[in-house]
Length: 200
Length: 168
Image (cartoon, rainbow over all chains, first blue to last red; front, side):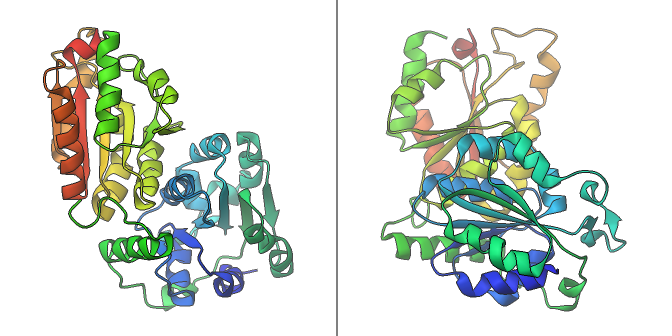
């Protein structure tokens, strides 16, 4: 199973979802598969889980989807017990775990390339609905089901390392431009102003 | 700190529009937590690291909240990464409500804190995060409101470092 296969299945299902990605290959691939103002493509690793959780706490009636990587989640493992404690109302987390730091360009292994198990870590942190998916068929059945269910879902997708993201152009949208598009989208769909924009 | 000062911090935050607070508790300002819990205008998010206090609060701001992070000043060091990558790079206004340990005005200062305290303001300056040390209740409500307004206007974190009477 590749990350792109999973993202291709997810992309057409996005309607009013709020999608947050960390800076990893999925950020590049997602930007090509889904051009929506409801996408927030963060610029670094280790931040998407927190930002997604905050969005979900502020807007519990909205479905928030976080697209993460193993390297990024390992950078912020403290997020796992906090997520379990905060228990956001409708947050689906997909972690594309290829066992390597692809950005290193030398496929340096991550801890999950060794003995670490993100599903087990999530469960030990208190996230009850944590699961691991190992095939495209299982993703179609169980991975997509997480989109339809409320509550906190943590889906670890064991994927092959893919170098596709190096061959396609990187998204050119500036981080601030992306933020304002995202916030204006929220204003339109929520029917209320976001306080800090405008005059602040 | 005198209970009255804790009440005034909480009332000041509320009057400034703050309605979401991520926090990692510490010693000096902890009296504000039970008060915020009793006030339904605050949504509270306890965290495990100051780094995620920033990212979670930032997500809440993008979702329409006016957010603050209540942390100890050591948390400034822990959260540098997310203050830069989310607070500054993405441009998200946040109020940092900081228990300032180890500063000159820290009434609980000791060899345990003084070295740690010496770097808090230089780090905030290096990160271009506007900040003010507050030593007493004089003009407290105005200072909180000013900091929130500055954070929103700059699209940046801003910090209030509570020292002096707040550390008793």
